[in-house]
Amino acid sequence: MYLRGAIPRARCYWKNMPIQTPFHARTQALCESFRWKQWAGYYAVCSYDTSHDREYFAIRHGSALIDVTPLFKYEVKGKDAAAFLSRVTVKDCTKLKVGQVTYTCWCDDNGKVLDDGTVTRLTEDHFRVTAAEPSYYWFTKLMRGFDVTFEESTDRIATLAVQGPTSRDLLKQVTDIDLDKLTFFKAATGRIDQTPVTITRTGYTGDLGYEVWVENQGALPVWDAIANAGRNYGAEAVGLDAMDVSRIEAGFIMNGVDYLSANHASIESRKWTPDECGLSWCVNLEPGRKFVGSQAIERERAQGIARKIACIEVDWLEIETLFNKKNLPPGISSSAWRCSIPVLDPGQRQVGWASSGAFSPILKKKLAMATLEAPHFEIGSDLKFEITVEHERHFVSAKVVESPQYNPVRKKLNFSKTVGKPDLASQTQSSGLKRDAHLEGVKHVGA
Image (tube, rainbow, N blue to C red; front, side):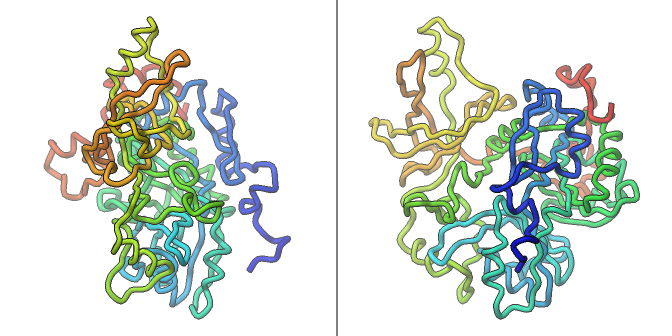
């Protein structure tokens, strides 16, 4: 355990002023909006311009450089590392191969979710765990009986997400890692500009993307190498506002927004199980396998769940009609929203609430993540969504839809198998700035 005075500042974010990430010298120079927020104790850019629209389209049509250093990071090492993580999380990490990444969550004894994140097997006895909030205490209190060491690496490892359809082509210009062979949710080590890095094919945008993990001292050389090469690939520095819209399109839930960690819930109804969060697919509940919360999850599955987070699409034409009646254009923000909005069944009985949502520029749909009672979370269920027009409350039609709504082929495509197949390759290669009129004349990160 850390001594109190030795706790890294990144983990004391509730007590101190924000600190700078290792990329701050570059992000600060580019942030013309002066719009910042605190993320896990670090300064984080909301949007570099007064509007995040250009940054959003960089995610979907070019490459986005997103500083995601504030993610909590933990190094788990030792001969029992795989067994330990299999005990603490819902995923059987003993099945992970070296160079493989998995998404998982971890629960308390009652099967209530504490947090979600990724686990990467870097070597046979070395794993890296990411988390949305501090998890050091929870993991270390469960270490007894396991031959492992547990280190928080948040404050020494910088992380840069490079996301978008041209991200692979961009990174191929600067790294010696064979990105054609780096398949979805895999990791590889190599160099960028002579700096040792780990690159994972992961991200939070729902598009083709990678995350670059580098020791702090190598952060700026890595940023500069990627940004300079990015001039030919529509690369933009992108803030959290644009990423929030893209994660709604991708159907990704967010801790503290769409569900509440059991650590912070004051009443039972504010606690969530993996199945309620829509994470049943990442729970390895094989016969005989035990992990923290497994018995509670088994009991719940025998009974069935009473609620679930689902993706809904709100009828845009009905929204337009309501505003037209007031001689107004449709009231909509380009930003994602995070607030509780009632959701009703067709008979006008409330059956849940929407917790976050956004209008998708690329899909031309109004989407939301909503918690719904059974059976209303089933795909195709008809709903009513509350909307206010000129201070009057109305309800428009909504429907539960498949998630993710935005799911391009390139996200999971095995590029090593597309050689000689231009029909597949064309879906993934750089389209060039000249094909994207909205990117003409913009200031790029390498400029």
